[in-house]
Length: 173
Image (cartoon, helix red, strand yellow):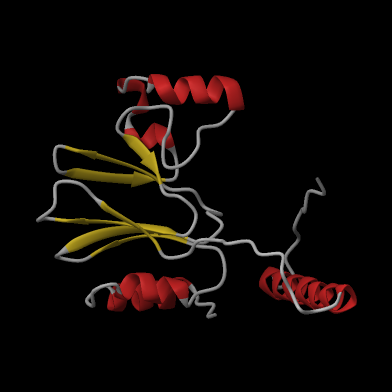
């Protein structure tokens, strides 16, 4: 995969929007943590990374698209509670899928993009990444442990490089 800085990421994603399914392909090539809202003359797109490290919520009311990383920016105080989601929240302490507690407000799921065009009343949702767990492996347990160790070392090396000498706090929960 690729890791791009903010402006390079924006340009890469905007360029991909001119081709059908180009945005999904471009997102599938990326590594790292990101969320973006992109706008061209023909469409608006909201995207999140495969782990939804930066959650995005959206509302689509009377042809107006609103996207934010905070529900209060989408006018949730004026919205009614979604009763089915409220029951789910009361029993599980969270709401699943793209639902939220409020009618008319949805969240992007991990590895998802949502596109609005002027021709369509509703947004088009597309998963460009979906985790599929498989436990079958021809590699020995020792080999898998070594592979996992290399992945951890690489992850922490990437983290340290990104910190670039700044002070950070890392919770150990």
